[in-house]
Amino acid sequence: MKSYEAIVMSVNPFANAQVCCGGVDTREIDPSTMESRLKKNLYLTGELLDVDGICGGYNLQFAWSSGALAGRAAAGEVSR
Image 1 (tube, rainbow, N blue to C red):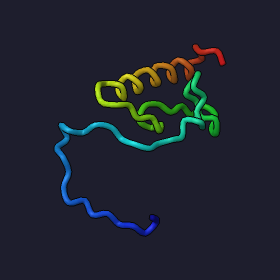
Image 2: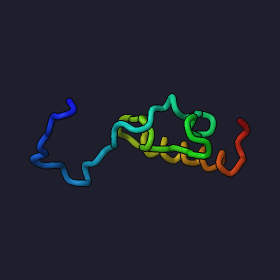
Image 3: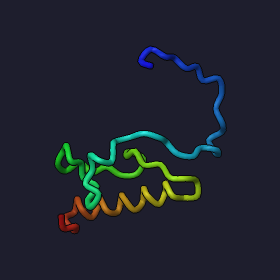
């Protein structure tokens, strides 16, 4: 796998874009604050994390909700 090369022949238009896959393993994140368990004061949200929802706004909702939680935690408004 490390030496496999894939050639992209074409892509769908941007209007068909859905979601990115992969990202930081959620086991490395405190779910109550979205703070990294490995690096203090580093908050990860949305598609930075390995979270994929089905189409229909689920990924957007996760991005907004996790962002709001991380913002509150970073501001000291969430008890740990």
